[in-house]
Image (cartoon, rainbow, N blue to C red; front, side, top):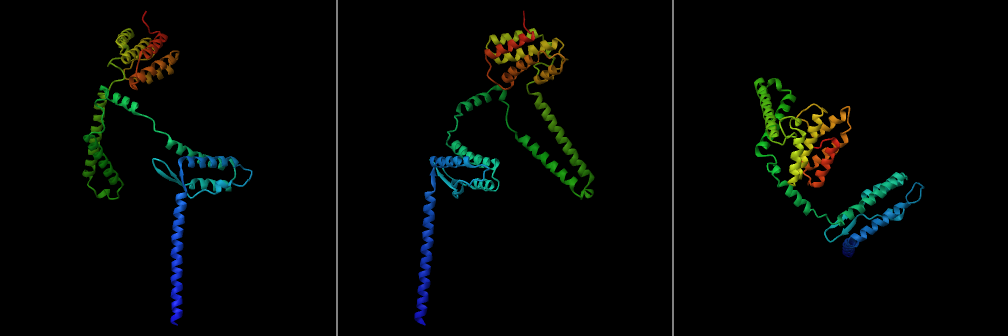
Amino acid sequence: MTARRTYILAGILIAGLLIVRLTIASFVCRADSGAGNELTAAEYHAELDQLLAATQQLDSSGRALPPILKDLPQSWRVRTEQQDFEISPEGLRRDIRRFEQEKNLTTASAIQSRIQNLRDDLEGFETSPPDVSSSRERLAALLARPEFRNVHGPAFLDRLEQSLLAIILRMLEFLFRSSAIPTISRFFVYGLIGLAVLTLAFLVYRQITSASERENVVPTDLAVSAKSWALWLAEARAAAAQNNWREAIHLAYWAGISFLEYQGTWRPDRARTPREYLRLLSNSNSNDHRETLAALTRVFELTWYAKREADAGAFAQTMQALERLGCHSS
């Protein structure tokens, strides 16, 4: 009996050692296989090229799927100098399974697009980012101009106003949705409504007063034609003589508007924007000058509102447009 027990214990011990050995061997094999699956960026690119070439065989004829599309790895491990990646082909597998169910050009095109996107992602990673230092310097120079001096994000009072308004609106929403509103004091509800109205009125007032500080579209408080177009044109040429091209284009544009307004093309209104003048000319019976005014407006908006660099060429284009309108001094 003792010998039999000894044999049983020995057998259990041997079986345990075999299990441990097999477990260690499987981990070693898995680690070796994982290390062997690592690809360089060039190898990964070549494998994607092979997959993409294999998709040329996909059609609706019922031919078997190319083996390379069947034997996809669990994942691609790509090692680069900057970073290591693990890319899952699960999306590609789904497209392949869909093609096996419905062999047509649509499902084949989906596989091609998926592989092409993987290639584009790799090429985008390998492409060096563009140098934006010059653009950043130009932007910094633009923001340093005097007209941007008072531009800033929401101040503390602005954020406080927004928070109070949000709280009040949430309270009103809760009260008007609640079934317990008959039990709430009527004066309390009216007080909240009054506070909300006062807050909104204050915000509207702030918006109006801040808007008044901005640059008006029309340079004066009077109608544009209140100043003769010839005077606008003379001031534009004087600014151009000082190489102040942006101001020269600005004055030349209003010379053209004053000229058309003096001709009775539209009724004077100092609140119109350049686009509104263009629409008025489009809607009028005679729109012979619409294309010319559109060109004049485009140069003006790019230099004045979009802050594009102005030069003598842009001013010359503006003057040519004025001549086509008939606005030129003899």
